[in-house]
Amino acid sequence: MRTLDLPPPYKKQHEAICDPARIVVIEASTKSGKTAGCLVWLLMQAWNTGAEGKAFWWVAPIYQQAKAIGFARMKAMLMQADPTHTIWKEHNSELWIELHNGAKIWFKGADNPDSLYGEDVYAAVIDEASRCREEAWIAVRSTLTATKGPVRIIGNVKGRRNWAFQLARLAEGGEANMGYHKLTAYDAVEGGVLDPAEVEQAKRILPEHTFKELYLAEPSDDGGNPFGIQAIQDCVAPLSSAEPVVFGVDLAKSVDYTAVVGLDDDGTVAVCERWHGTDWKTTIQRISELVTDCHTIVDSTGLGDPVVEELQRICPSIEGFKFSSSSKQQLMEGLAASISQQEIRYPDGWLRTELDIFEFEHTRTGVKYSAPVGAHDDGVCALALANRGKNQMTNKFAYRIF
Image (cartoon, rainbow, N blue to C red; front, top):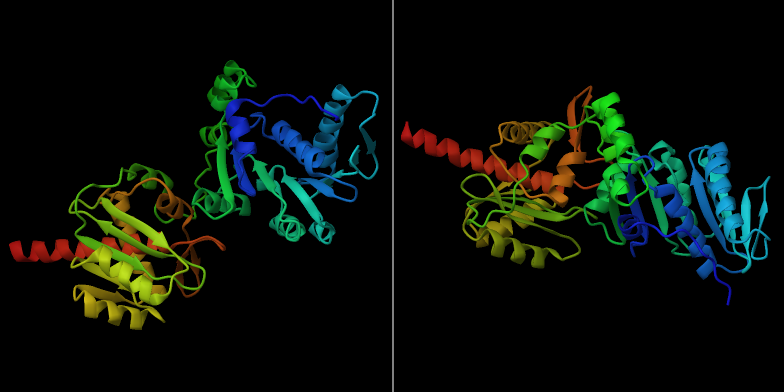
């Protein structure tokens, strides 16, 4: 039996890279060990599961980077473990390493995505993903389809308007078969791979937003979020144990979720649930059991109309709300105002993630509010509807007092 001695990872690095999920996104500090760790992971995949004709890929933003970093470092790793080349060989012009079992590890650039299509790949790493083109990720994902191979998507954080950030939020939000991890410079210091003095000097001399992105894996706010990243953070609070007094419900469309958010009398989220894949009868029953006789606003757009009518027969306090570009703008502006004034609070987790990635853009017909392509905004819409209901109740109360 042939063995290979490889450098051991530190605990948090191991937990991230060896997550059992098939698609794992790791947002990491510079020099936190993400590249070295994933080189070991890819080598392990090829060593343990490889065979003649099986391909394993390392993909970097450009060909030269794949050669100078991925290929060179793996060769050095193997040379140290086996300097006589008894269990491996390399091809320096085509950038591949072949192991004793016949598996080949290829090193490729993402600068020509069309060249990445066609082959069946059994495991892959996309390095510096936030600097790779999205078309390259789509191509790599296609190569893993037949094999159902695992992939590790790693890199520094680089703003919010890129596919890697959006995919990370999808993974962080609990998407099936996906895992999410963050490795900061301080994790690397604790793991013994970074000098704390080096990190502290970087903190002193670099611009704050640069240090946060490169060393803390915290994205800069690049202006596309209507609520404000810091304002969203300021409203995070534990789930309330009080009884909810108002609900917002966003109904599932296609692959989306049905989301239900209930607020207590102080505006803190007391109920926060979402689900998909159920029939309308089950959905109606579940919503009615959650909201009971509380004031509730439900999305009645399109197919939501008959659902709302059926819910109203069970729960008369339910009100329908039709989404249009103008009504959604008003709804989201109301939520933004409540968040900025900390009149509403919500737990960390998938709902906060949806708020973080929510976007707006100015178009010739007005302002468009939505989640990035491939992500969800069901929780944001449910929270906004609940906030609208809370404001309605407050206004009625104020009117009676006056």
